[in-house]
Length: 191
Image 1 (cartoon, rainbow, N blue to C red):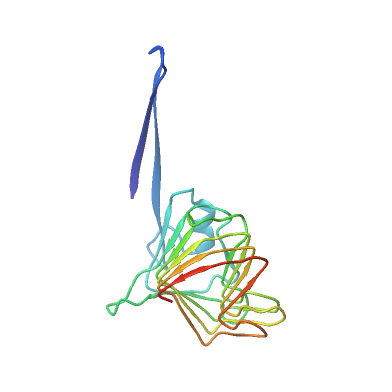
Image 2 (cartoon, rainbow, N blue to C red):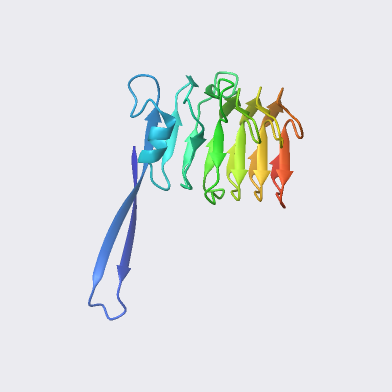
């Protein structure tokens, strides 16, 4: 789906006029019949403003999902009870999400379950380094971090905004749910 955004500019003298059109795209990810089967491949193909729409499936990427500093939305779907039905699963083998390229709240994660992430150091579910994405209606469950901490989420110089998020059954040496370091100041609303 394309949403055209049109900009028109006129020079003060009236000698020149031009129009440019940019478009935001919805990129779909699912096991069969979508644009991509891999979330990371969809991120690689995306541009700022795009929405990556996930189906109601469990996704095993085999490596962490990194938004690479792009201002995109990674959006899951809800089940009939209004709970996230798109699951990002680290299979106990790796961290699930990473933002470390100066992401702002223009990078958002919506309606997702982030589960079974593991890291021997920090941020089993999600690691934010000098990045402050937005998370809406996300559940962090069963994630683990060892040495430094932050089983569900680790923030280093980061202040993400979390709305309607749940942390349950995460574990770490410090901060099973969330560990904040280096002036991190997340905003949590109805979490």
